[in-house]
Image 1: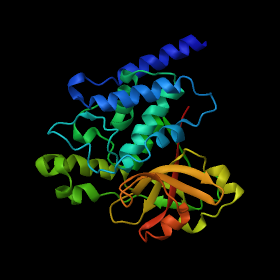
Image 2: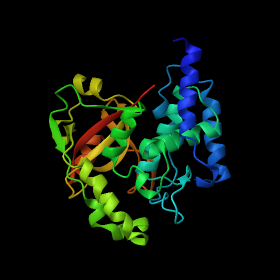
Image 3: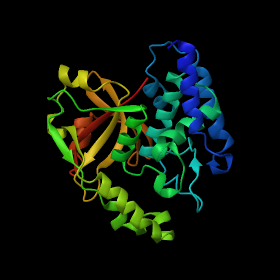
Length: 286
């Protein structure tokens, strides 16, 4: 298969994910930011670490939760002005996927975002959104968009076995489930499908700054912080940044109320959160 044929196949697959205009919600500021970022990416050297590059463009933007919960029907929400940990990861991942595939238009970005945020890349109501990050990882791995790193051992010495039920047991905490209790049963079915899945992770007690650790976790990898909170799999998300003193987290921080590169190392950050147990590592695919 030659390069032109490969590009044609990629473009055809991307078009499958194209959301209808009525399902999109964004501002002019959002489209201008994305278009500018992708236009500038055209001239970046091929060795550019796109996830870190795009994540750093968002540093300083305010932390705001629940920005996807707008309107009564599910829409493709684009909000680059206000971010939480999940929307930061999704915004950066969509931009990176476009840049890696040399797709630079606003429509390309919308297609990438919808294709990654929803199960099978299709917007089919609230329950089609990949709410649990383990589900997000598995679905996007099947699409070839990301890959979870679970080796070598060490540092991946621990195993997380999922027991997922938080959303179905706390529907009042979710705007859509509160308004539409009939969806809770479908959410519970999705949770049952996740329960029992097992993933290797790096425990927070084993996060020493070693050669093996630096080889296993790369700059720009997605860091998913595992937790022991009842019914949940992942407590927080961000991007890996290696510095001379060790691994740091670039994240949309509720504490700092904005997107930041944490000044403290990630092991120290995790030590301040008793429910955090370690990290899973997800790599965006070129």
